[in-house]
Image (cartoon, rainbow, N blue to C red; front, side, top):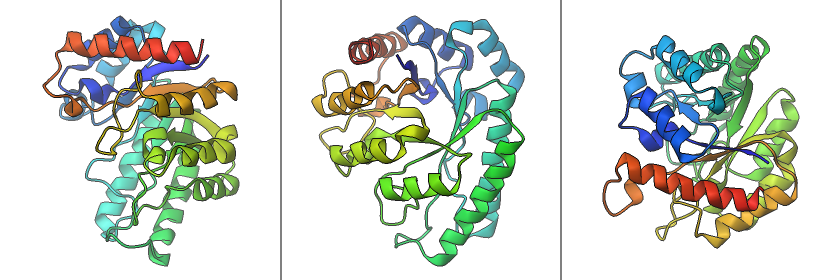
Length: 274
């Protein structure tokens, strides 16, 4: 059975200690800590507070970590934006290691212009991967790169591109964002599983909404459950991280409503991964 987790950004408006409490109350057994969770990020990333939350919730450990991505792009045409984006990602790898996390998920970046990536963009990407390789060699945490939404300027959104990268970089793990891949098709998700399943350590779990966008609940979505059943049939036993957007609901959810929703999601996962 995989470990059932949720991204802390679902509780973005709460302090870290409350987020850990709510996740534990929901019945999930881990969480993915987004470094940009506001109460952590805006306080200057106090690692002692995060370490205290982890120590107070041993049933949720080891957690996973998501490197910063908002406003950042390690492949930006702007050299200063690229440099600070890479630095934040490398520090996330080191912080995840200090926190005893099992996995740290990183984004691959994109071409700044909404055009097909050029040779320049791929050179930036190779430099970024090289820096990640160095950081991974110095830590114990698994570094997992994530597939992005299928956009013209994304550097990693097809199963073939992910498989090619993983073949070149045997140290690198993979985080499958099933919602991103489902924007192409359910068959595309299955191709990711076929080609990258042996390097898969984390799955960002969500369904597509009526607008074709991800980060919706999966408990009543047949397509999402089909994908998850395929993962279960193939023996996947890594992290299953609910990545839900609370803004997709008709009105704001209270903390109690979020906990209830997560409990329903956990039950759905439990039926597929008994």
